[in-house]
Amino acid sequence: MSDIEKVNDALTRGVESILPSKEGLAGLMKKRKIRAYQGFDPTNSSLHIGHFVGARKLAQFQKLGHKVIFLIGDFTARIGDPTDKTAARKQLTRKQVLKNLKDYKVQIERVVDFKGSNPAEIKFNSEWLDKLDFEDVIELATNFTVQQMLERDFFQKRLKERKPIYLHEFLYPLMQGYDSLAMGVDLEIGGNDQLFNMLAGRTLLKSLKNKEKYVLTTKLLGTAMGKKMSKTNSGAINLNDTGINIFGKIMALSDNFIDSGIVLLTDLPLDYSNDKNPLDVKKRIAFEVVKQIRGEKGAIKAQEHFENTFQKRAAGYEDFVKSGKNLSETVAKASGVSLTQAKRLISQGSVDINDETITDPTHIPAKGDRLKIGKKKFVKIK
Image (cartoon, rainbow, N blue to C red; front, side, top):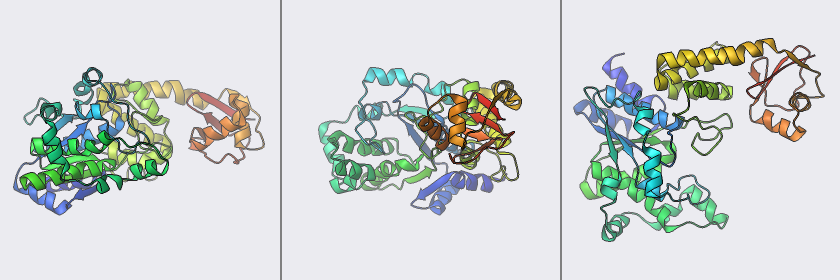
C-alpha cells in the first residue's frame, strides 16, 4: 500500500465524518506531521472493544509518522460524561479513578506503540484541569450557550421525562474541549457519539488560539442487539479479558456484527465476507482481534479452544428434542425456560439453526435441524 493509499485508508476506513473537511485534513498531513489524540475516561478497570476501535485509528496515524497522544481522562472521569445517558453518572473519587486506570497502558500497548521510533505519549488531563480556578471555568463557559447544551437529544429526553439535568453535566464538554486547548492538537479522534464534546474543543481552539482543530469521528461498533458497545451493556468485550473469552464473546455475536467487525476491528479487505460462511468469517475476525491484543500464540490458543469446546461439540448434537409448534416452543422445551424467556433469547439472536441465527419465534424447525441455544446448548430436532 502506497503512502497516499495509507493516508486515504486512515481517513476513510471506519470513519463517520471529518470536520471541517477530509480534504483539509489530508492537505495538512501532506504539509507536516500533526498532533492527534483520543481521550479515554477510566470509569472502569478495563478498556473495552469500542476503545480498541479508537486505539487502532490512533495507531494508523502513528504509523504514518504523526505524533499521537493517548489521553487518560483522570479528571473528566470524576465529572462523568453525560453523553447518551438517561440519568447522571455516579461520580467517582480520585482514588477510584487511579485504581481503574492502572492497567490501561498494558491493555493497549500491543495496538499503540509506546516504545518505537515514534512513541505515543500518555497524558492525564488532571495535569491542566486541576489547575483551573473558578474564574477560568467562567471564562471558558462564555464560549457556549445553555441552548447549545439543551439541544442535545439525551437532555431533551430527560426534560420530557422530568428527569434532572445537573449543572456539572453541562461542564463536561468544556473540560473535554479544554484538553485540546491545553495540548495544542491538530486532530481529535473519537466515536461519533462524542461529536458534540469534540466540537467544543474546536470552538475553544478557534476562539482562544485562532487555531484550526480537525475532528474525526469513527463509526460505532454495535452489538447484535444494535446497541453501542460499552462498559455498561451486555455486549461489552473487555480488553483485560483472556484471549479465550474475547474470542468466545465475538463468536457469540449475531452475524449482523460481521461487516462492522471487519471494518473496525481488522485490516482484512472490506469485501472479505463475500461468499464465505458467516461462521468462518466471525472466526477470522475473532482471531485477528485476539492476535492484536494477546499476540498470535494467544489467538491460536483461543481459536483451538473454541473449536474443541464449542464447534466439535456442536457438530455432535448428542441431545435430541421433539419440535414444538414453533421455534419459541422448541427452545423452551430444549432449554427448560419459559415461553417468554425463549422468545427473548430468539429475538436477541441467541438461537441458531444449522449455523444460521434465527430471530423469528414463529419459525418452524424441521426434523434433523441442528439447534444451538446460547453458547452451550446443542440439540438436534427429532
